[in-house]
Length: 176
Image 1 (tube, one colour):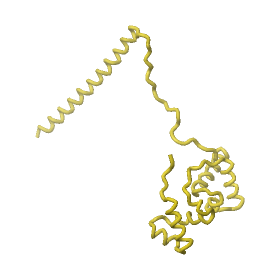
Image 2 (tube, helix red, strand yellow):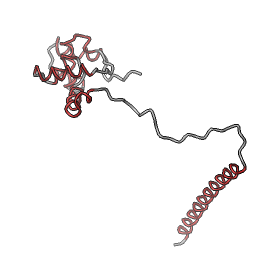
Image 3 (cartoon, one colour):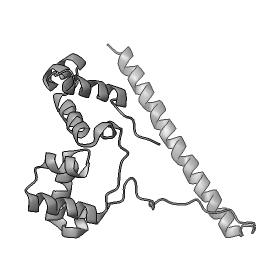
Image 4 (tube, one colour):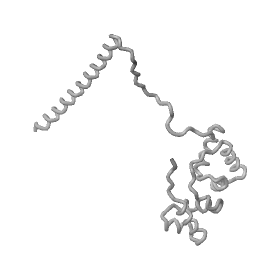
């Protein structure tokens, strides 16, 4: 299942061409198209760095620990800004690099490893007992019947309480 893309390739290319070829400012294009100016600036920078390929929708990529470490070392060594690092390594968002920095500062290299996504596989739940072909013993039959009768008794108690509450409400309505 692919993720939904908010702005398609043709729309991005049209906005970028308005800025680069027609000489419009990114603010003017953002007002005309009713989108964020930062999106237009990001698209223009990716277009200048990677050409039309930079505007293609990106799939959610999984980055290796080595790649993440390389990006963080490059930022420190070359004194790159988040924007420059994002463009140099073709990373879609600054927030990804910020998360890597925070995880590396808190947990070291282990923080850069991929975390499992989604709901955990094993969940605690009670399984129904399997029916066996063996006939029940007399004691097991009695226990099963007792359990059924107790459940039936609880249901009847709740029903009686509900009926009494309904009658009490009707009595209150009738009395002035």
